[in-house]
Image 1 (spheres, rainbow, N blue to C red):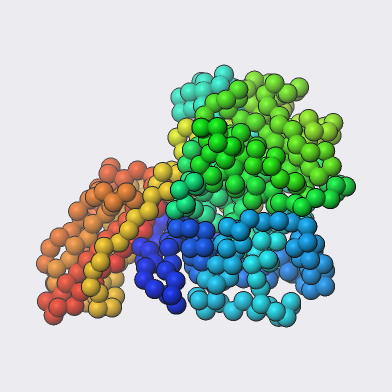
Image 2 (tube, one colour):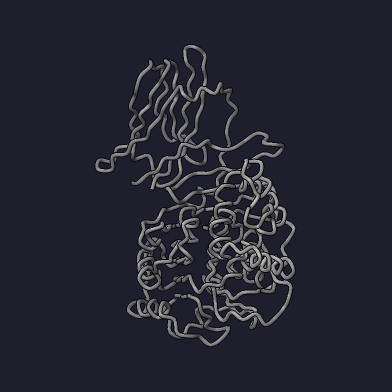
Length: 503
């Protein structure tokens, strides 16, 4: 078992310049963070901006302006004007993006940009959320497997698994700021969903919802823009299909909701969107192929011509919308499947790493809808994601909101110092607690749903250092909360909640 510890306040609460922050963060590693936001679209956008405003600004200035537009404000303005004139976005996303800017300001982040010589606004945020269509780079690949192809894996037993490589520029502002964005809407017609993304990106590039539907976009071909319509960012269309409880109102949430959400809008760019669903229709997986010139088709296992078994493969070319072209990654993945179409979770990962793994692989992930298991590996400045060990998450854990109880605190945070020590060789995990005043100390571990795992200490302790071992057998992979509460003999009181991720 591997762990990370994050000493972060459990959640933000209270009034901050008239607006409550309904969000929470947890650091997974040096370059990967979880952001959980809840409430309506405005509240979620505000919390996103308030909690991650510095990272949003960094990505906008260092990646978008400097890398994509070469710090040329005139070129940027041309694209922005085109976006404003030709794209339409729902009011809920305008509110969310505007609230993100407000949250950044309230957090003390300057939204003025010296290159543009103006304040960044909601239109800048929304245009960045369509950057996959504005700057089309032939990257990303994915493979889904189910049925007879996965029946021999006891962890799948015929259920669908998808492994996906998200490839893009390995810019430092991106690879140092991977984000798992967890959205918990309060709107009655929406549902929880999670996105593997970057700060400021609220669209659904690699995303899954609570109903067990997953959507993963690859950039497609050809990339001609012959038809002029009022366009809609395709990844916001995907979000509509995932976030709504039942987009097409047929009584069930499945992949067809996402298909319909894309079909209801016009696309500017070319996309290959790989969909999987816990609910089996004709197939557990299908692929949407769409572009500006040819419209939209869906591709499923019946359209396979070279892929054996119950498997679907997507790279960066259409295979049904237009005639397929040669793709070395597609061929390498197919060669592996031709050697055996039987797929396990580990073999799916290995095939994609070998056939699709390149130096610009920013994120690699695997999703199993039936169990809600999500594995994510993230690139660093010197290593592609497919070469790195993945983190494992349970979506039911991510979708849990844990509140805080009211407790009077006298800002005595220096009363207790806590370190969490791991000795992997003998599976020893212990807290080192140092007290600066004697008093009553309670140290407890909770699951993310609030249930008590272990009562580590409830005792009067003198000033000094103490060691408390955890019962390792009580802990599985997941997110836990460590609560320390103290009242000293002099009447000082404090409470702190820390987060620990066990892998």
